[in-house]
Every structure is written in structure tokens, then in C-alpha cells.
Image (cartoon, rainbow, N blue to C red; front, side):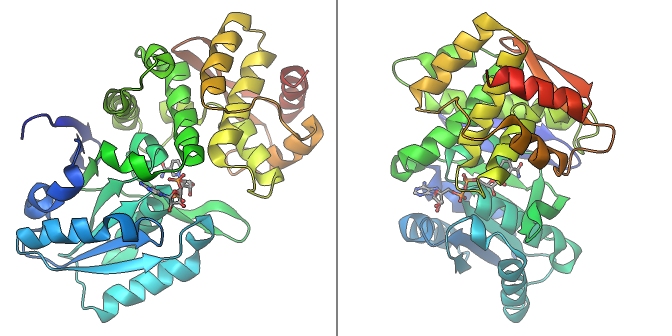
Amino acid sequence: MVDMRKVTVNASKTYDIIIKKGAIDLVGNLTKDIIAQGKVCVISDSNVAPLYMERVKNSLSKEGIKAKEYVFPAGEKSKNAQTYIEILNFLAQGGFTRKDTLIALGGGVTGDLTGFCAATYMRGIKFIQLPTSLLAAVDSSVGGKTGIDLSCGKNLAGAFYQPSMVIFDSDVLKTLSKEYFADGMAEVIKYAMIKGEGLDKLILAEELDIEEIVERCVKIKRDIVNADEFESGIRQILNFGHTVGHAIEAQSDYTISHGRCVAMGMYIVTKAYKCENLCKQLFKMLEKFNLKTNCPYTPKEILERAKKDKKADSSGVNLIVSKEMGKCEIVKITMDELLLLIKEGMK
Ligand SMILES: NC(=O)c1ccc[n+]([C@@H]2O[C@H](COP(=O)([O-])OP(=O)(O)OC[C@H]3O[C@@H](n4cnc5c(N)ncnc54)[C@H](O)[C@@H]3O)[C@@H](O)[C@H]2O)c1
């Protein structure tokens, strides 16, 4: 197919990430070999389904594939055990078997939830990601982390489970709100900080070349996932800004969005390491998307939350530090040191 960008992931499963304007209407053609003769269920949320469900189903129908649909209320609150079980029951009642396929049509919530259903229904069935938020396109749809939230915390139940294909149509971002777009840009800025690849220039350009940005981001993530699928080493660098960011998110009781919290987290750590020039560059990128750097909580409040993070243990936490655009390192620090860093970064 012409004008189609393709990035191939070689993790425990090999699959393509397709980036193409208008791809929503080509889903049937692109996925028919994966779906083969099996059944399909398209899972989406109540915001995205009215916008794109019909087009996806029409495209499948052109290939003779009749898809079922399952729509849940939009929002992080739906990424829970109840929705998960409801979907599994829906599949079982519909006679879905191991040969069948789920399609996640939506943002990170839909992708994580659908992926976890696919990982566990009958011990694993195929799934395809159609990311519709920028965050899902550059981050959550790639790499195979799937899961749901528990009442004790976010993403506490999950599985590493790779999709069979990811298809991103940049036109869908036209209906995404500015706020959610900015959330996705926080993750793009994270890639610029940890790996570079000229992303800083693309981010600051007058006109955003979204397809080029998404391609560079997923190539970075692809390389990291290929090297360390199960996050025992290098994959941790994707958590740049997240140790402090997650703590701020939890302290706000999830009223401040993930992207905004990661933005604050990246800034606090970079400032703490006194990298003035990098701090200025980071600030410029964040400012462009109205991502604030001043955190509304005290260092102690943040530390208490960071201690409860699933990635922290009694000896401390692995902090990702960037001292130069496009470069980063993993630094093991104690919780006392983390407190000092947060204090310094918030001065
Ligand atoms: N699996 C991973 O590796 C990974 C990585 C990062 C984040 N996540 C997860 O991703 C989730 C956040 O993702 P998100 O920000 O995409 O959340 P989301 O799925 O809730 O989408 C954000 C909002 O935008 C709406 N939306 C999505 N696409 C739209 C479109 N094209 N037009 C109009 N509205 C649209 C959704 O309905 C929702 O209201 C969190 O649950 C987080 O834990 C997972």
C-alpha cells in the first residue's frame, strides 16, 4: 500500500505498526489475514465508538467479516475488574474461541483493557490495536503492557501480551480534545529527552508533523521493547518522569491527568540535577502544550506516595535521569535521596 509507514516489532511476537492517514477505513483489508476465518469483537468506549465504530465495522464487512461490538463508558474508572469480567462474559456468551480476535478501538484505557481480555480469555486470543489518542499511538498501544486498575492502585493486575498488529490513523486526532492531545505530547517530550532522534525540533516546529513524530516515537519504543520486553533493564528508561509523576497523580487522586503529572515529574528531576540548559529546553517544549511545571503538593506528600509505587522497594527506587537531550541513565537512589531531589527540583 502506498504512503504507508510500517514499523516492525520483534518481541515475543513479531508484528507491524501501520501509520497511515485514513487507515480506519482500511482496517478490514489490513487485518483480514490475522482474523482469517475467525470471529471479531471491536471493543471501544462511549466517546470513541460513536465516532469510529461504524467505519471500522464497514471496513471489516467489505472483507466479509461481520464484527460484534462491545462499548463501555469512557474513562479510567471503567478500566476495572467489573468491565473486564463483563467483556469476558460477553465473549463467552457470543461463542468466541481461541481462533478469534479482539480489536481495541480507542485510547490507552481501551487498549489496556482489551489487551488484558485478549491475554486471559481462553488463555490468550489475538488482538489488534487501533489507537485513537496520541498517548495510545506513541506509547500504550506498543510494547504489550496490558492491564486493569484495582481499588488499591492503577495497573495492578495485568500481563505482558503483544498485539498482532497496531494501526494508527492520524486523522482520528482531529476529534481528540486539546487536553488529551497535550497529555500525549508529554510522552512525546519524554522520548525526546531520553532518546532524542530529532524529536525536540519536530516538537518545537511551527506545524506538527504528527505521522513523523509517531513513527519516531514508536521506533524508539520498538527498539527498547525488542531489547527488554519484560522490563528487567533498559525498558525502565521509559519511566522517565514517572516516579515523581505517578506520585503526583496519586496525590491528586487522579484529578490531574497522567501527562500533566509526567511533565511535572520530568521537570522536577531535571531541575534537581541542575541541568540548566536542558531544563530550559524541556520547559520550552512543555510550555508549547500548556503543560505546567509547578507542582501543587509538598515534597513530603510526593515522597509518601512514591514509597507506595509498585516499582519502589525497601532499598529505594530506580530513577531515570536525563542530563543531555536524548541521553539518560538509570540511577538507584534511596527514598531519603529522592526526598532531597524533589525538594531541590521544586525550589
Ligand atoms: N500499556 C501501556 O504501556 C501504557 C502506557 C501509558 C499509559 N497507559 C494507560 O493508558 C491510559 C491513558 O490513555 P489515554 O490518555 O489514551 O486515555 P483514554 O483511553 O481514557 O482516552 C482519553 C480520552 O479521550 C477520548 N478519546 C480517545 N480517542 C479519541 C478521539 N480520537 N476522539 C475523541 N475522543 C477520544 C476517550 O474517550 C477518553 O475520554 C491509562 O489507563 C494508562 O494507564 C498504558
